[in-house]
Each structure stands twice: as C-alpha cells, then as structure tokens.
Image (cartoon, rainbow, N blue to C red; front, side, top):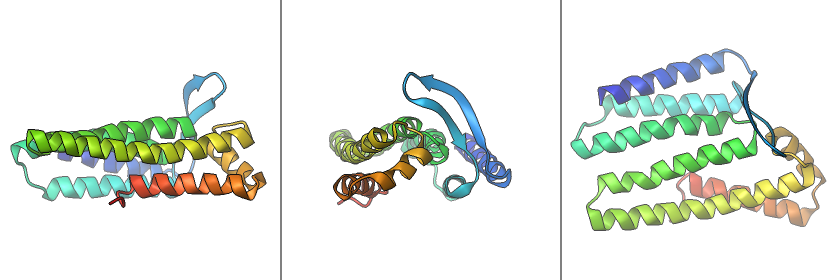
Length: 188
C-alpha cells in the first residue's frame, strides 16, 4: 500500500498548507436553486480536525500491515479521507451532508472486504443502517435550521437558531447530538 501511504501523506501536507494559509473562503461554484453558494472555509477548527484526521491516517498507513484484504480496506479508507476533509471544511449544510454520505458508504463497504462473506454482509448492513439513523438526526436539524434561517449556509443557519423556541431548538440540538454520536462510532 505504498500508494495509499503517499496519497495520505499528500493529503496531510495539503491539509497543513490549508491550516497554515490562514482562514479564508473558497467558493466551489456549486449551486442548486434555493440552496445558496457552496464552499470550503480553510483554517479554524474544521481545518485543524482535517489536518489531525489526515495525519492520523498517514501514521496508521505508514506503520500498518499489508495483508491482501487489508489493502482493499486501506484503499477504501483513503478514498473516504477526501470527503471527510470536505465535510470538515464545508460552509454549507448540503455540501457537508453529501460529503458525509460518501464517507458513510465507504465505512459500510469496509466490512465487505475485511470479513467472510456471510458475516460481512450483516456487518455492512448494520453499519449502513446505523449511519442512516445518524443521518436522520442530522437531516432533521438541518431542515429545522433552514426553516428558521431560509439558508443552508452553516454560519447563518446556526446564528438564526438563537431565535428558535426552546422546543424546536431541542429538536435541532438532539438531531445534532444523534448525528455526532453515530458518526463518532459511539453506538453500541
């Protein structure tokens, strides 16, 4: 998996350059009617987490083993690294959601290449269904924030959350907590 190590190393160097390049907005030119412009914000907490994630991936790959089945899982993990970084740097909820969906598909695919056939299908399906539960929480929070703010821009939507009544704000917070709980792998 030399290619995986090199790719992960380049991702780490790129994330470091983004973090050191100060915080700035990069507009992607992606636009869907009614959603606003999508972009990435470098630096800040998201930039540091993207750097830490890339560095951890690089170190694991550099020090890891190279069994045949693990090479495929490693490839999937490296593929998931890019959308994970996009999700961390996204300034738009739709872009973040799409990036997290790609990561979730990669996470659900890994058991298929690491385990025996019967057990792999069950584990992949379980991972996929659990990740969908987390997505339901995230989507609930996003839609409630969009309803109050009229935008999917993360900063504007979160700022507008202060105007929400406590009951609706509880649904937003609960949805976000559920999403983080599931995406962080803390589920049983």
